Image 1 (cartoon, one colour):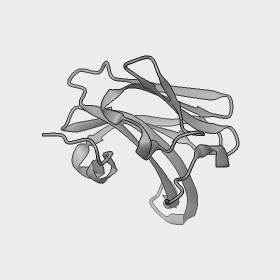
Image 2 (cartoon, helix red, strand yellow):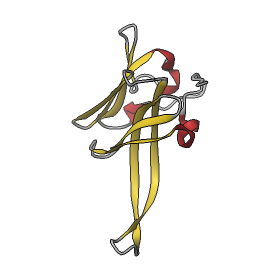
Image 3 (cartoon, helix red, strand yellow):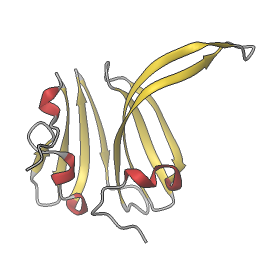
Length: 135
């Protein structure tokens, strides 16, 4: 059997998936692919001493969004001149109404909130859990 990644591999960085029946799944013990996403009502992201929570109470809620980014981001000064790249390591969590995503970007190394924003689901459709079908 293929071994799935657990967040226990990281120090002080994990998620809790709160289910409708009161159970809390911990990403240090269970891979996100094994969570029953149809019954998740809240996600709590723990990074160092920061906790960021997203729930299912938004208008038109369909399902949660949950993914990580890594790579490089181009930077420019005020005049628009390229000044180099900076590394990015972001944990994104939020939800969708089937049209838009309501997201939080969290710095993976500090736990600080980078930004809250709304983006079209079309940009992130590949990040939906395979068990979720949005009509």
